Length: 283
Image (cartoon, rainbow, N blue to C red):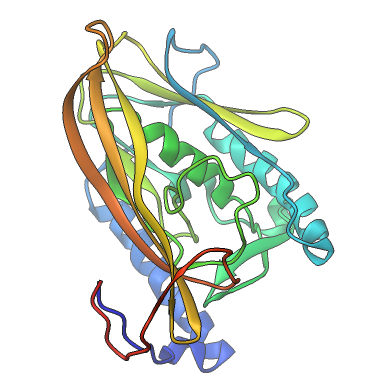
């Protein structure tokens, strides 16, 4: 992987330029939604499909410091508003799920509060911040299924040390309305459904299907490592997926690399490999 020193984007040099850049990208996305001929999911059902493919839960409030606690509390409100737009959604054959199209733009008028969002290499408050927790959970469910991920982004930096992390680093999906979307398409003959709900401490969700499959998936992490390059820390790993036959003793029939991650770390890891500081480093 090639590391280079990054220059500031033009949109980062003045708040007005940033707003103009966001407006332009959002306008472009809305035009794409009208012209791309995709059949986007929009039908929800209160009837839960019979067969569960995968279930997961994620903790609502994490230990990120007292200064962030109110933003986390606000995040829970944001999550509950956003989850209502997705809970029960059906993904029929040929349909595409678009996180941003379903959620819409998070605004104060809709009840969204300032929550934590990651932008331009730092954690800061933003209206609707924190709803990436839903897209992260959904992506984890989806990669355990035959659904096809068609658009996904992940953060370019890791801001907090692991605090009871269950999922591999870099296995989530960040969103920012509406030009950083999370999308997947149902290229199968089956109908899928996403369900979301809340317990006292967790956001929970599952992915269901209308017919039982004879195969399933394991998602695993490989080659995880922290690196120190000059004065900066980085983190890398690989996310792999194994397809196995459920009724043949878990026989693995396919293995694929889903993604390679390499991100800047804004904290000091406990264990790391130190490499020489250079402008360009191949790893």
